Image (cartoon, rainbow, N blue to C red; front, top):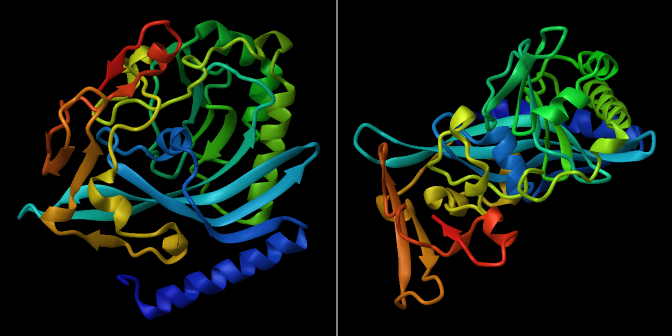
Length: 319
């Protein structure tokens, strides 16, 4: 481990204290769980230059309920792929703490970015909407459906939203409402965030529920080489990711997420993605590699359909 013995002991003691506090609330606790759905990993921990953080697991996983809704809280653990000056591949640990609730029905995708945030935001930026800020000026508004943002961000909704402690963003996507980038990960903060998300769902206009198809609602992920923000194009979204972490996914099993080292080194021969040949292609494997800032093999067809193609009668593929 890169962490020293003292730091590991301090982290273990902090987790033991949190576990005691959690169970005293009647909530359940797991030291580790497999990664959350990739749509949520992309929303909260995509990276700084395209999709370069591979999620390895969840740590300090809490399942509970507030009012009438269940919630989950966890630390999302991943590794950002990079290379040394000499070209050796490695991963730097990244993490963010979040709380999320399932939606009772679909909603268009929307991202509300907290301008009071103190944690670095590694989530997927969406195209900015107009108006670009909530009425109180705190939240930057991003998404694809301006009418939904207008209907949703009424004074009562914004007042509840701004009762949240500083965090990176609140995202509606892929069937959940997610708040991530929490500065503090303790029972009072988790309870307060879960209650606020629950209250926000109660303020969604009745006419908005169920009005989004799979494309607009944020199902699927964008190609890992696509730039985020204003240049995102909805119909390029894929039904599953077009990369496998360039070897990072094989370095740390999810069971070890709580004590995952601060960085992991890889051999060059490990830093590749291997793909089965798509139907109709020549037999064999497609291989993608990443060397420094260059990607090799990313243009090789992998037969991954776009979300848009699944909504049409004829097949259409990307990546």
